[in-house]
Every structure is written in structure tokens, then in C-alpha cells.
Image (cartoon, rainbow, N blue to C red; front, side, top):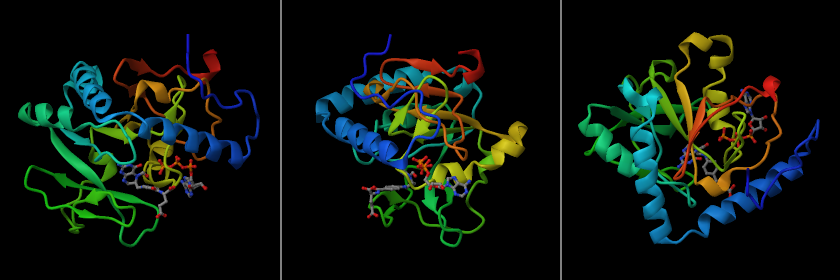
Length: 216
Ligand SMILES: Nc1nc2c(c(=O)[nH]1)N(C=O)[C@@H](CNc1ccc(C(=O)N[C@@H](CCC(=O)O)C(=O)O)cc1)CN2
Ligand SMILES: Nc1ncnc2c1ncn2[C@@H]1O[C@H](COP(=O)(O)OP(=O)(O)OP(=O)(O)O)[C@@H](O)[C@H]1O
């Protein structure tokens, strides 16, 4: 049973971009309203849930993000998982292909500078980045999600463009795992033609495995 107060219009065929952007605003506000203490507890719980995640048991190369705008913080998990041998990567705005991301190594010593959105990112060094298809798993920052793989991001389409190849080469696809506060779950998100569905979503409360839409 979903208890969310924020829900999109569930059965619209062609949702207008207004409803998407209103929903984005409401969900961003909700996650920003969490206190520092609530964020810390959420980060600890998230770490426990990620450490139990079967899709990450054998993963060696995993993309993550640094939290912004109230996003759930994956750094507690990163800290523990590094000791288990996982190598992490951070998204960097592609310097040439606007609207795409590259993934640069993220170690304890990585120097970070704020990108144009104010989010810290590693420098772009051609040759050092890991191609998206060579990642074992990608931890996506989510603004909202539903139980069918639907995802709402910050609205730039960065992740959708970067992982569009998974549509034509599904066997090359890393495990796509969304991270969010549990309160960011909505009943159903309108699916846009370019949306890349997630395999699972992990929150401070649950691990959700996505159901196929056709089985509803
Ligand atoms: N932590 C984190 N890192 C990430 C993302 C993310 O969602 N979260 N991204 C996921 O794509 C990429 C950056 N995409 C972003 C897209 C829009 C905004 C944003 O704040 N937009 C503002 C307007 C900012 C401006 O133009 O100055 C807004 O909508 O209010 C931020 C990041 C790469 N790194
Ligand atoms: N594969 C793609 N090629 C070209 N444009 C794309 C592609 N994927 C998404 N877009 C564009 O990106 C814009 C934003 O998409 P959307 O609102 O779904 O962003 P989002 O999923 O919230 O953001 P993000 O992927 O950065 O988390 C849309 O206008 C869409 O046209």
C-alpha cells in the first residue's frame, strides 16, 4: 500500500510536461525538508540495504553520485563498499557532448570542483573515464520513482541520454539502481518515450524490484 501524499495523474496517456514539472518541484521540496539528522539516518539505512543487494554482490565498478538538493546520501555505503574492493565513479558533465555524462574514478584522493549546477565533480581526463557499458552497476539519483521502473530525475535528461544505448544493447547494460528517500515513491509515473527503466530502487526503507508494466 502506498502512502504517498504526492501522486501523479496515474492513467494519463500523454501527460503534459506541466504535471511532470509540478511533481518534480513537490518531490524536491519534500526531500529538501528532511533534517540533517533524518538525512544521516537515511544514509545509514540506505547503506545497509545496498550492502544486502544481490545486484551489487559481484559488482566491481559502480557509478555513484554526490548528494545535492536533499538527495539521499550514498557515501556511507561507498565508504564500506570500498573496503570490499568496489571501485567507484562519479558523473561528470561531458565537456563536448552536451547533455551527456562520463564517469570518472572516485577515490579518497580525488580532487573535486563544482560543475555548472554547483555539484562537485572530478576533472575530466580523457582516457581515465570508464565507459558506461563497462560499469557493473549505476546508482542513479532520483527525484521520484514508481514500482514499475519509472524514474523522475532533475529534468536535464543526462542519465536518459547516457544510458540510451541500453535499449539497443540490453546485454551490455549495467544494473541500473535508483536511490531515493522512501517518501519519494509515487503511485505511477508517466513513462516518456526516452525514459530508461530502472532494474531496482533502494531507499532508506526498502529494496524494490521493478515489476513489468504489462503484468499489472
Ligand atoms: N547529485 C547529482 N549529481 C548529478 C545529477 C543529479 O541529479 N544529482 N545529474 C542528473 O542529471 C547530473 C546533473 N544534472 C542536473 C540537472 C539539473 C540540476 C538543477 O539543479 N537544475 C536547477 C537549475 C540549475 C541551473 O540551471 O542553474 C533547477 O532545476 O532548479 C542539477 C543537476 C550529473 N550529476
Ligand atoms: N536519448 C535522448 N536523446 C535526446 N534527448 C533526450 C534523450 N533522453 C531524454 N532527452 C531529453 O531530455 C529532457 C529531459 O528529460 P526528463 O524530463 O525525462 O529528465 P530526467 O529523466 O528527469 O533527467 P535525468 O535523466 O537527468 O535524471 C527531455 O526534454 C528529453 O527530450
